Length: 115
Image 1 (cartoon, rainbow, N blue to C red):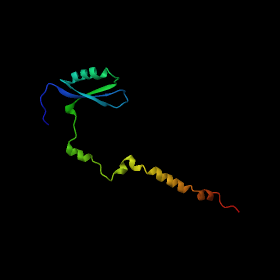
Image 2: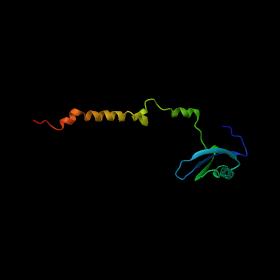
Image 3: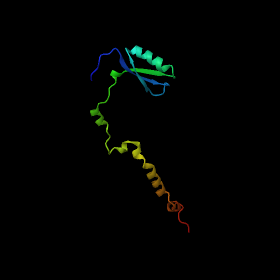
Image 4: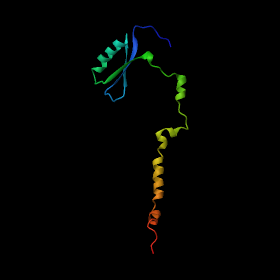
C-alpha cells in the first residue's frame, strides 16, 4: 500500500443510539488527530440525534480483506445443513409423521373389540 504523507488522517465514525443497540457506521471524516476527529464528530453528528456511545477509528487501523482471501469465504455447495433454511422440510415431515400415527383405524383400535 502506498501511503502518502498528509497532515490529515481519515477517521471512521461509529455510534449507537442506546446502550443496548448495536454500533452503526455513520460517516468518514478528515482530521489532523484523534482529538480533533472526536470534536468534529460531536459537532456534526451528536447534536442531531441521541447518542449513547461513539467510536472514532483511524482508517489505517482497519484491515480490509484482500481479493485472494475472499476465496476462503465461499461456501461449499454441500453444506446447506448448516443454515436454518436447510431444515425447512422438517415441519412438513413431522406433520406427515403425526398424521400416520393418529389415523382413524389406529384410534378405533384403542377401544378394543366388544362382542
